[in-house]
Image 1 (spheres, rainbow, N blue to C red):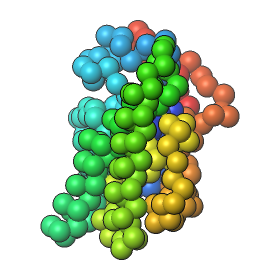
Image 2 (cartoon, helix red, strand yellow):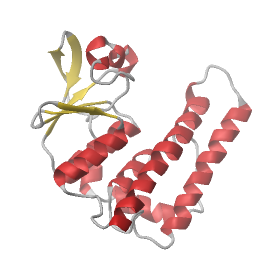
Image 3 (cartoon, rainbow, N blue to C red):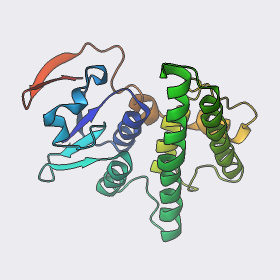
Image 4 (cartoon, rainbow, N blue to C red):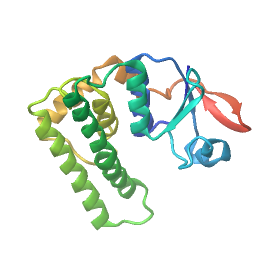
Length: 220
């Protein structure tokens, strides 16, 4: 069984989708980020960076992993699923996973911050991160013109990128005119595992309070 510490964010959805697609047994523990639960000592003992998600694999001597790329690679190895077996395919998936982690995530995250949360309007910053996020979408669109999936076969790279791009409207970055990207997005959205993953945590399920290491967290 895997304990999965998460919240309703793109990075949380990345791992939730992987767990659902790989059909791995897990228990989600949902942190209240607005109450800064992720900065409490018990959580920092698992992830010194104070960010979700984190997994603890109880079947592997309580192996604890943070950072979504590392988690997804571990889950792919554990399940034997969604990471190409060939050397060429493996590194194709790896490069697009890193593309999301170094590009889509940081740039779109900053676009959201300046569009939605920054206390003052900074038009130059909004324009910079909006334009860079759109440019990265265009990179994916060109690649997907000749590929059904990012690494030819469906992989954790698709899960990671889609988890962010699916919320492009929240960042106010359009996908209009990117027909190959939109085709791929529709194919991702149609997958039952993806549909289940983006509902972890469930927006409709009543939460129970539990205690772990003296801290209050919500589980579903």
